[in-house]
Length: 378
Image (cartoon, rainbow, N blue to C red; front, side, top):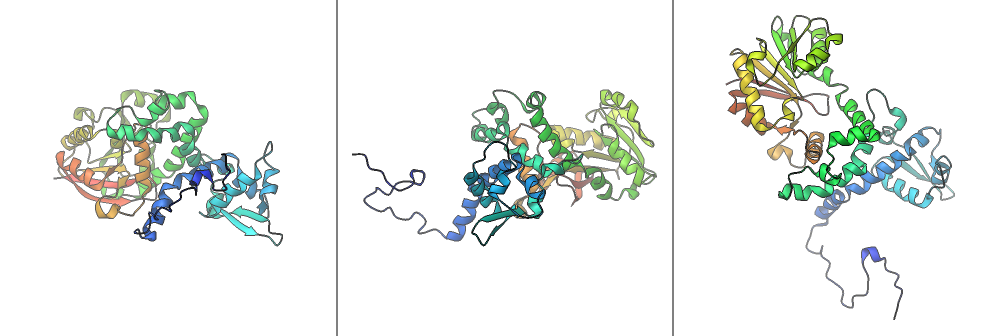
């Protein structure tokens, strides 16, 4: 006999004759709530992606007053599902993306918070926008890769999760064939790197190297060295990269910066210097490769020489507990696509020791993905 029940099927049925014991009876609710918040975090990230794709923050920003869902819907194409939009925006108001007010007629109005304002697509510029982060993290090619992470960690496959989720296509191939994905990724890169030159310039006292030589390993076209030279003209600045990169930089020669072709693994190709700078270079290599590169630097540098590493440094041990760190999230995303890895202080200390260095100190900068770590010879 078919009977219709009022209980929502998603959350289970009340047909059980014997009530089940509450599974949380012996659990502190203060412990449960934070765990559920973490488990449900993808609800809000997908809701964020939805409103960014629909340009809801831009619509709200274009109005001088808060708007109801019906008023917002009038500016959307087709015929939006107003009830669904209301429920998504209501969720996002609980995490500080939208303001929410009830009018005298019991209709709800939404407005933008300071955080929500950062998600406007119209904020896009040469420095990127936070909406690019949302769209990059949530697009299907990246989102589906997370479902493949357990098998990758369990050792059932050595293929990066992103490649498995995208039918063998790696991240580089994906960007080459999907211009919209590449646009999101490039926006993220611009946002993260927009202030990195100033972070390096201000993150170390380069005046201690006046009349001395600094070699920027993997320095590309010399922009970072150019920034240091502008602020510290008495520092001798050298940019070293593969010969093919240096040859390609002929039209971009920067005044006061020497461009040299070489290889960090071959000491003979590194000019005589007093300090070696490596920004976002060593993070692209395995531990064994990093040790070999550091040993190469050790052979080139004088006894009082320094290695200045400009990379994200993760917290570790007790300092990392209950301390969410942007760099940590970015590191796991890089794991997902089979890319570089960020390292913690103890990891850097171990690699430095193997290559004959000690860590003199590490300091943070105003860049999301960059700390300054200084090594000296043991």
